[in-house]
Amino acid sequence: MTLIWDHLINKGIRISLIVAAASGLLFSCASNSGTPEWLSSYPSDSAFYVGIGGSNTGNMADDREKATASARADLAAQISTQVKSELDIASSASSEGDFSESVKQTITESVEQNLQSVETVDTWFSPEQGAWAYVRLSKAVWAAIVKREVTDLTLRANTTLQPVAAGTMTETEEMAALGRARLALQASAWGPRVKDEVLSTGGFLMEAVDRAISERVAGLEIVLAVEPALVEYGDEVQVRGSVVSGSGRTTGSYPLLMFTPDGESFLVTSNSAGNFRITLQSADLGLNSQSLVVTPDLNTWEIPAKGFPVTETKTDLFVAPIPVTFTVNSDVTEDLINQNGAVNDWFSDLNLPVTVGTDSANSINIEFAWTVFDYPRYEKLPNAPYIAGVGAIITLRRGDTVISVHDLEEIKDGGLDFFQAHNRAADFLLAGTYQSLEIAESLLESLAK
Image (tube, rainbow, N blue to C red; front, side, top):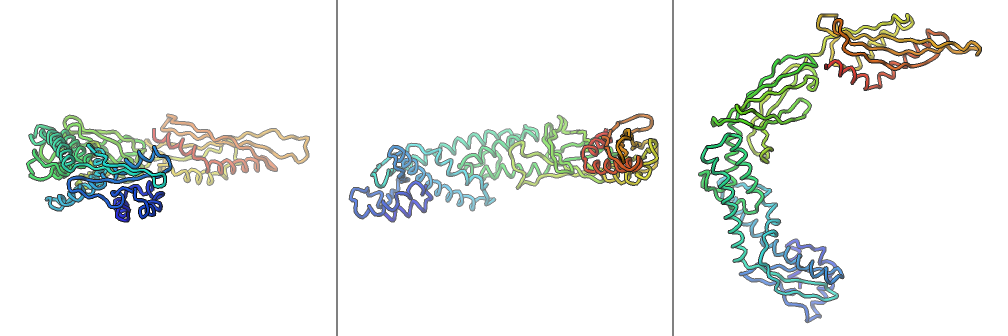
């Protein structure tokens, strides 16, 4: 019984299904002559793959079903081990010496899906030890299954690549065909066994496909230009470019990824002539020197960019801040003239994409105008405070044209006189505005128009 136990552990079979019965099984082996021999000594047959599995949950019907499933999993694990070994040998003998790691990960699943003609040799059950099953599969039958799978996959993959070999496709169509063939090969455990019959490499088709992808990606050139290269914040940016194949093939409908400075990306597709054009908003790019990067979008064909010499083209542009003038209008009351410095500090801390200077034909004038309302004093109340409401209107103009108007909500406060009430309310107004992202966002939106 120790042999069967060691085998099941080494094979990684579902130990959770048998551990509950382990102690009882080991004990009963020495005393129960009814225990089958195949549970005491793991069967060995050169003509068959063998699987043994058990379950002891206390539910006889469930245990019988789970035991059979566990036995089939044991059988699959044995076949998977052999396939992996053969794959490793093939890999080390191949020209490149490397097969995709993801293929190895799918072997066990593919083996289980192709387990046909599995024969149940024997089953055994006892109330104490649960249900056990002994299954096997003819190695000759399995070899025929594998041959059929490889033959079918070879036909499908090579048929997909025939137009590539004939040179009748565009660059985009060839990449799509290579991607489909690669995906089909990777989806099957038998993909690494498929030989190249159309690309004339004389080796494995998986390697031939990857080599063909690498050659096309490495030979691809992306020409990129920005017009104009110097823009003012809020202006449009025209990005133009073209895709050129290293082999001279047409590059219409070629998928590209454009990356903006903040890391966002979006898909760009070339037209029938291989050219592309896209309009960006400089407000989405940020100030000063910025870079745009364009690369082929291999993911369109489910080809991972990692491992291939992907072309990356970069172009630079400069986004200049908007020239503005900033004035504070205290005409409503001279009491707030002393707040001019605080208002200028408030405006500076908004971090808007502007540069403050003198008035010019192209500059935007931003006016901060105080609004004041003095509330009637309640004379009948001794020492009644003076109450005032202070707000502001921010107006953006270019020349005589008003771009936008923004209201700062009135703040009320009091003092020993209206001068003190005005300044206390103004202090609270600016302090509250410092904390308000809404004002900054509203001004930013207006500046970007």
